[in-house]
Image 1 (tube, rainbow, N blue to C red):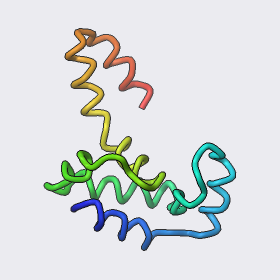
Image 2: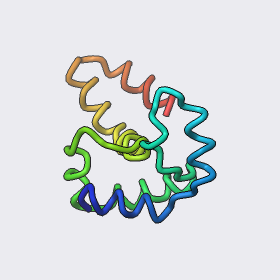
Image 3: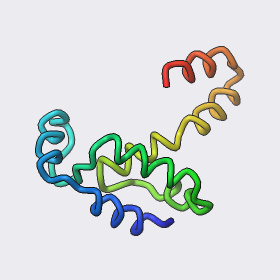
Length: 101
């Protein structure tokens, strides 16, 4: 799934009332960059995206325009964090970090 398809899918899950609410919680993010996808729906979509064989196209396309795209990227990220920390040579940090997720 490419970035345009993902954004289109996120807008299908949009809740404008939740977008207004969520924008108030994160004042550092411009309200135009918040789509308003509720967390359970975003998690389900992240699981679907994780199974997509072309998810790397999305993960490599930076910067993301919307807040929810960044959340999706983070939900796909623990494998990348594990790899990064392993390269730094500290398996302890990886296991400690993975327990927090």
